[in-house]
Length: 251
Length: 341
Image (cartoon, rainbow over all chains, first blue to last red):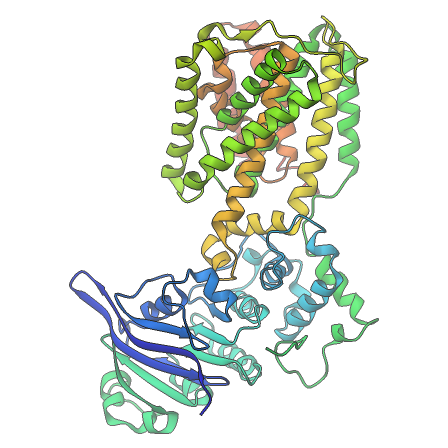
């Protein structure tokens, strides 16, 4: 077993009397395809916020590639190889698709504070942006402002931004939320072509997509891990059917 | 991490990875950047400056104050239009620059260009010092903080009358001839061209600045600071830098005003001055530099004319114009012009 690139040790978060996550442990090795599922309000998003650093846990630790990042700011964690997409599109709306991707590339290359040549005059960066946009099928839309795109296309920009960072760990927060199911499948086809060494943690409600994509699944219920295991085991587990899939649960 | 060009493995190698054919794709992406390019419209600026000089002979002081106002509005556009920093206290930096230039001329040297540099530097320092509080706040809190900073400076100018002259203002300082040759004459000819030159330089620098990677990053922060952090960008230091630069430009505008008017009053730090520049930018349009020109020209000329026509209710004309612009051209007077972005 490889050393985990992302490790959560006993993460707990409480808002007053409300315990949102309790003692969550999770390990992702390089190349992991891991899904986090659970009913609404199970604490999935809060868990993601604790991993990315937008929310500080009351107890527990977050380790990236073996080093403790629990007290680091979000941007510092990103520079250590953590990237995420957002459940609700969170982009630079009035900027173009090309500019959006270029911003992410500029951040990864440490150009974000530079006063020199415009990004538009940096051939290496432009080539990288073009290749990235081509790979997610957005090259022809590069010159559109993001706010002019259809919802599903904006989801692709979300993913392109995360990919531009060449992360070691990629958190996908409901990547197909709000996308029509045919487009959802296309999105997951794209996700299946992610570089093999990237550890992916996906939160998703569409069970068909989860079972297709994930090799391991963690089930979160009321902030605690109910069950963790290979996809097939979790799929057959009666408790999961009860709690999450309901009586109709079959896949 | 492997250095793959294409982040997802496609069957065929990505076109951009091979030199030659990839340049087409490169061009597609390059064209997606809405850069502030030099356009024919910028040539119109030169014509405008010339016309201003030729036609405003009897009103050169007014024409010069338009140019100063444009520089001031450009500075606000950097902070607010590009960086999304809401401010109702931008006159703080205009005032600091004005007092710095006046004090420098009085106590150190009457040489104008070094005086202007000192004015910009002092304002930039004050901007950097206050930025740490201002850029961490958002919305109303941010506006109140900028207002507080300007108010504190205003009161300080009032308290330290020995230095600032208080209500009497600071006057009686000399400004040496520009480049040692062009004396600042009584009619304001030198003053006008001096202001025009400073405006051109500031404008060119602003244009270059917003095109840099830093310039795009602050626009990204304006659009979505949380996402910017999740791209690994430290948001606060970037905004501090922007705010300091904008403050420096405002300081240059203030210094310019002090030098061409030979007097600095406390109104340079006043709330009215902060509000005026905000109205100028709202009239002209934010986030595209051209707005500063439209807004300042319309604002200063209209205030002047309206005050001549009706000295009591002249502000009403501006109010009506502002309402009309906000209602019918929310992107400002420059917003309707295609191609000016």
